[in-house]
Image (cartoon, rainbow, N blue to C red; front, side, top):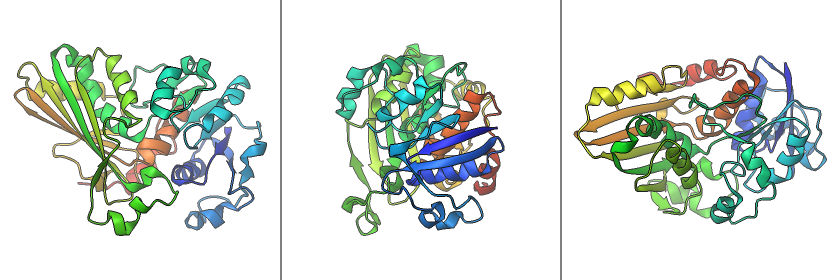
Length: 344
């Protein structure tokens, strides 16, 4: 049984963390730490969580307690840099849901986030926590960089192919779509219902901060081909839908590709291979990633669907906590995922 601190628990991902921590069998207690919300009661902030969590008071993050065994940091980029180094030095387990420790060098961080990294030494200590990638060693690791939502959807679709067919790859392109909750709770005109209803728009083309995450993991497996990544906003609140286009040098048998995916995810509780392209509604409110693979001679198209707030953030964070602690990785999240999953 462990104690948890949630730093920044007032946003969408923070709310999901509260829900998961409230129902986790090995979390004996948790506290939420905030800034502008400090002093408020949780149920005033999240009235829909009545009978799910206690009506505790949000503590001030400026006076962070170090009493907990593990900490989730659910803050905008740049903010985890203020907390992670001291928590690490105190031997705490840290799962950062932001982007501050996902990249491998301070130079990359400056390029993509336009900020100086103030604890670059921790970049070598972190684990990039793509939880369904089973080659990652979590032993004796205390800092987990929780992947972004777009990279989670894209990498789960691409890694089985890159791992098994990297020398045959000509190019990879990813076209991905997100619900508006991925931008957080801060009001923005372009995300208003009157702007988004019936609308789709591309954004951050060739400049999205999640691109280097994807490229780094692919290159670790021998990928050295042209890569493109395009992101779009959908007129929905929750979800990521990603379509990956893989061009190979030669024709490939569909069963060979399917076999590679089945082998890659044979131990995964949360990756589901679908016979038809998934609907976004099948994964919303769950920690599942649904994949569909289509093959036409030398072209492979993989459709991938996840909930950006759960599989792309808080659900995967709980999965990473379970792995760091040596528990069953599905603890606290599988039953909830099954309960809400649309069955088709």
